[in-house]
Image (cartoon, rainbow, N blue to C red; front, top):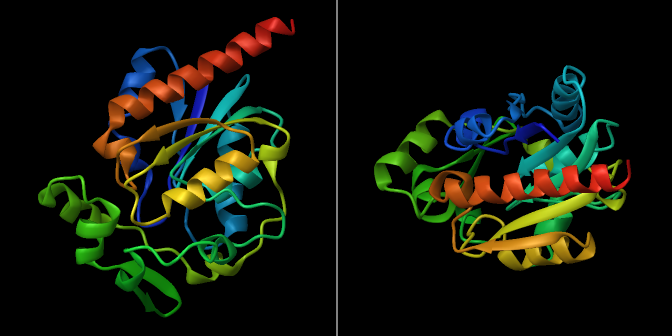
Length: 232
C-alpha cells in the first residue's frame, strides 16, 4: 500500500496538504494530490479518477471536507482499497451535502458564506474564526487569499455511488470544527463502521496538526498492507 492520494475540499486546493506530503514521501509513499475544479461532483470525481488511472498498485484515498463526497464516489475505483475521511462529508446514496448539514444546527461558519453568481465564497472573518481558528491570523489570511471557490450547486447534488459501504474506512474527526459539526462527523463515522481518531482541531487539521494527521494516514496505509498480505 504505497500509493496515497489526497483530495482537497472547498475553499482550498491541494496545497493544503503541503505539510503532509513530504513526510509521506520520505516514508516511501507515492503521494498524489490532484487539483479539482470544484465545478460539479462529476467533474471533481473525474479529476480524481484520472489520477487513480495513472498509478500502479493499490491505494489509500484521503478526502478532506467536501473531498469526502468525492472519495465516496471515486472510491469505487478498483485501485482503491481504503478510504480516510478527514473532517469530511460522507453521504449515503441519494444524500446531498445539504441533507447532511441539516442533521445539526448551522455551524459558526454559515453566516460567513457569500454567494456570487452561483459560487460560494467564505469571508475573511469566517476563515479566521470558523474555518481555521487554530492557525495564526497571518496563515488564516493566506488561506482566505488563495481560496478556491466552489459551485454552490454541489451542495444540492445527491450522491450516486457510495464506496464506504464496500471499502475499509477511517475517519479523523476534528472535535473543535466550526465548519462541519463534529456530531455530524461522528454520525457518519459510526454508520460506515470506520476506525475513528479524534483531534482537538479546527476544520483544517491537516495544517494545524499535520504531524498527527500524517501519522494516522500512515497507520491506515499500513493496516491495509497487513490486510493484503493476510489474504495472499
